[in-house]
Image 1 (cartoon, one colour):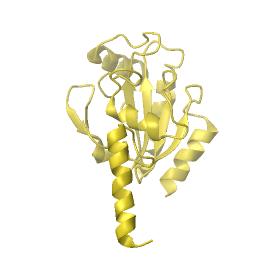
Image 2: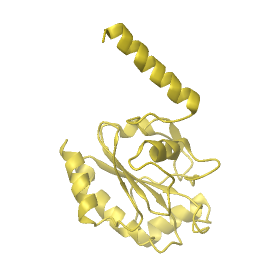
Image 3: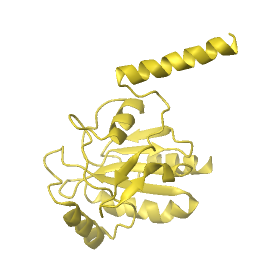
Length: 185
């Protein structure tokens, strides 16, 4: 295939993705600006080149104790290039009803969270945040987030390298192995 035909095919595929509203496989979710829990702006592109664990969190969930493990993961691997990003969401059983200030206070006081926490967002359904639209369409398997504390692992190159259900805790050997493999790249 000639280079011209290849470029036309790439342009066509990109156009189809834009027109359909879909997200191309391999598209980095680390684009755009989002609001941190303190109200300041955060350009997600600053995390390019790092291994990123993105988690939708909630303060009144059976999995809320995972905050402790997420903080331990962050502390253990942050100097090697891991960052954990917490995104409070209230789509599942109304388990994150608080304001950003209340959520920040809870995370700091109860779990000593120091990893970046973001303003409450929508992770499923109408009004889904662009970040979660990309994550849920580009991950393997694709599909809606099912519950609080679902995890997406993004490699240094910006591709989604893993998706983990809520029941997979931060200390799970499979998750830790995937993090270590991504950090090694």
